[in-house]
Image (cartoon, rainbow over all chains, first blue to last red; front, side, top):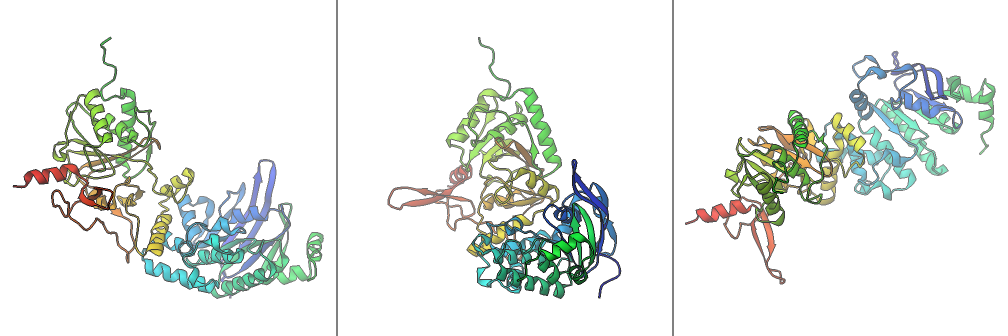
Length: 259
Length: 279
């Protein structure tokens, strides 16, 4: 199923904040329809990596390449800011851990979903609203809430709304930063279920940063384990989780409390 | 001492040159907000300090000045500004739109069609059309730079979702020359179509916010809208009770405390001219 040319390529990526190390020498390739989990403890550099991959941070060394819809593999660092912004609101999605950071809390759910459509030129109110209703239904939000502000939504609903807002322009690649963090377990389970369905249905590629190994197991095909800014282990998710090689990964896997 | 206390048109020449440079830049990039070093003026912010500075910078001894406030020539603000320039620049003043070469305005565009030998100077309180959607100036400047205007339509979407139609009735956002989204200052949206392809030069001055922007003559100015909710230049469905005009923008005047009211032209010059022309 996986196409031959990768969608996103990182080459020798590194980021330092002054003398502080963010991450070092990360190389990876992500193919269309593939979900990559990035796991590691707090401060291991996974968020830095996610921001580098999504061009929200500039790398200190190395580069990130992205295959645009015309098939060309392009260096994100050499694109203009306008081109990167355009990618970010058409081809990409970014799901924040804190839904408030990814939503406009004061405008209605419908406008939140419609914003990306309007940003790329949709100018027909009826069709924008139709798309918003369709997406609210797909993420299991009562369409009757379309004119309510996300302020009035529960944590789980906000997160689902954020996902709808990101997927409405049919992106090819979604970055997720702890998408289920801070939600209670039953809500987490439903959200994961939803994400898994959408990723498969839309053949989305995704990079999911998480400290929760269960999330990685449920969502991802491959995973990388980070420690102190470096990738210490990578492989197929089941392989890494069932048979970890590195002592640190073994520790991580064995630290999960049995349910 | 009888030496004149003020320079011609109140502002000193260096300041006027600085403002003219900002104006020229504004004309070169239609709709773009040019920062300028706004001065303290002998009036409070919100009374037209930006407009006054622009007027002072472009005024010459041969000009004829008209000042209107909400369409009227006879309000305190309009009278004071007209007197300021009559005194400090010695220019002729008028209330007749057709006679004026420079018209400073607050919140209206005259009903009489403007010509190419005229300049319309707007007083602008908040020049940033995205301000109430995105409070950070650093962000809005980037959004303008990248023509990232999805947010502007979010506001119009919200209007329709809430009220069934675009309820924004003044300061209605426009796109200038197909590029910059601009706040036309709090003019009623009834006036928006007059900005399009206008023969006169339109200058905008925001004193407190320190911004100048411009629409050169005959520039395309489009009011933002949706295909299925097109822009409409609305006005009260009534005729002026003084001159009978049914095509002008009307003010509602409360005449007593028992609910009495009348509708009259907001443009006093237009109304007077129509009444004089009547047999």
